[in-house]
Length: 361
Image: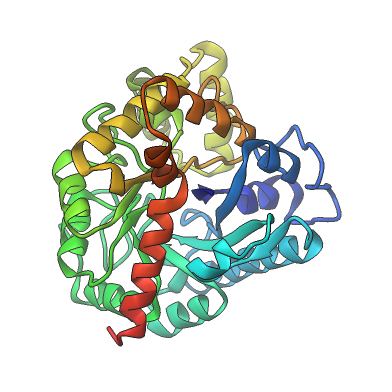
């Protein structure tokens, strides 16, 4: 079974269609999106972590909590609208019992979504959320983000409390987006295996969102999984440099990522300086690097399909997964190793977090 660790369909729908399922039929091909049910089927996706992301630039405090609840509601509505093709899943057993439908799991992207409240964290878990990414692109008061200026150089005492509560609840600790210091600190204090839901290898592409080799080794020691992402800026050094140039121009103009002005700058920059293309082979290189450093039991897939942004050639949308696995077979990957990458490792980590929770962590 192929289980993808991160898909931003809910945010793309919020941006493009105000989250209104009456405005677009996701059961058919939707060219303005990377994801629809027709292409999920073509891609062989059996399980999907749907991100219930909200932008920390646009939402903070109680507003971020409300917006996250709206995103959770969207996924619940989506599953209810297509019950023959989707089913909500909150446990590893429910994923495996999905009966040919796409097992739909929830992942909350960014600690700003709980507004420094363990009670909110508990309620998000009660609504089906199975992982929380500790930060997004901006720091939270209790953890540093990879793409913000470091303040804590790790986790605060409350940040450690958040991780222990997540362990108790059976919620996976997701270290995508956090600083390397937070990655290392979290791996020392978590009692359950952690994940990277959508990150690639820093040794191959020097992006702060990617995972250093020493962290990959620590992740393996704690039995976690790094789900390799397809985002071009994280897999291609050339695209990474293009994005650095764009970000420097945005900073010069005082524009925040996610703002309408920044979106217009992206269009302007792209017209004047076309972005290079990432490739499927580069994604395979990252997958193999994670395997080589962390081991075959600690690598997974986290495509991070969003809306209609350019993705690597050969992986343009969620229908592309078979091409990825064919490329791995061409490089000599065995069927059993491909099965671990596809979803076996992710199911193991889900079960491990459930075991820790059941044991009363």
